[in-house]
Structures are given as structure tokens and as C-alpha cells.
Image 1 (tube, rainbow, N blue to C red):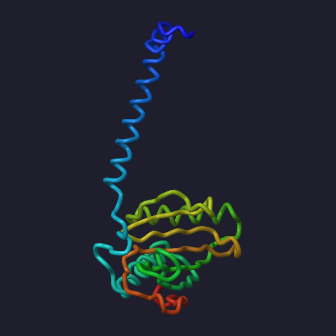
Image 2 (image 1 turned 90 degrees about the horizontal axis):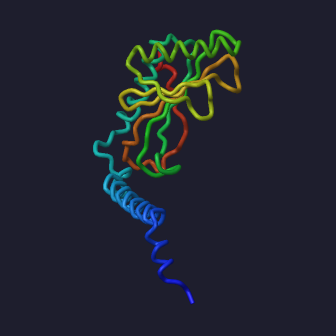
Image 3 (image 1 turned 30 degrees about the vertical axis):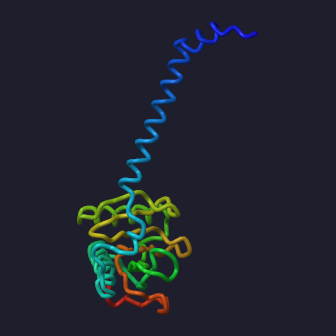
Length: 193
């Protein structure tokens, strides 16, 4: 036969009381966190309906304009660039964002000098109002900067040591259906000078 008085005493011991209090506190914290996440989570389909959609020309201007400014401010040489609308959801469906990929000549092939040059570009852009973020995942010594809805990612080109690569992305605000359009790049080199 079990001694119930010892069971009651051990259930009232300070260790048991602390364990029960901790379990209840954790339950309350998790419940509050769940309610907060549910409250602040965007409604389903918010990506499908941006508050202020952009036209095709506005979407293009959102990235080509900053690309042109960067080329001028940073004095990038031998620039070439392409523009494309990219789906923010999958490969075809709206909304879309504009994207510019541009290449520019590095003044040297020495890795340390190229990295110093890229840092100088980043410093120049920060002085012009761009905000620097974390380096891009695939390019440890690259830079990510944002300003006015555009994000610029640039780094030394892995395939051609004499060139740097910059990718500019706009906001996902173009809701025009381009699902059946061709996905070819448009050369915008002349618009970058």
C-alpha cells in the first residue's frame, strides 16, 4: 500500500511548486506569443494586393533610375545592364518586381584591391543616402544597400575577375498579369549612362 501522506508532502515541496509555476508561466507566454503573431501577421493574400500598385513603366523606373544614379555616383566603368520583370511568388504569377542586372569593370584583378574598390562604392552610396545591410549570402565580401524601395546587391564577379556584378530589385507592387509574356531580358545599357 502506498503512503499518501508522503505523496502529498512531495507534491507541496518547493521544487514541485516551482516546476508547476514554471509550466503555467510558459503556457501563458506561449499563448500570448501566439495571439501576438496572429494579430500582427498580414492577412492571407496581402502580397497579391499591394496597397499602391505600380504600372509597368513605374516598375521599370524604380530600378533603372537608381541603377543610372549608382553608375554616375560611383563612376562605374564599362557598364552593361539588362532589365526584367520577375514574379515575387513563382515563375509567372503577379505581383512582379523590376530587376536590373549590371556588370561593371573593376580597376584591378587583385582580389584585395577589388574588395577595397567595392567598399569604396558602398561608402559612396551610403554617403548618398543608401542604407547598408548585411552582406549577401552567396558573396561574403559583397554589399547590400537599400533606398526608396530599391535594393542593390553588388560583389566581385566569380566568373570574370575583371568585373563586378550588381543586382537591383524593386518592390513587389506590379499587379499587371504578365504570366503569358516572354521572360527575356531587355538591354538597358544605354539608359545607364
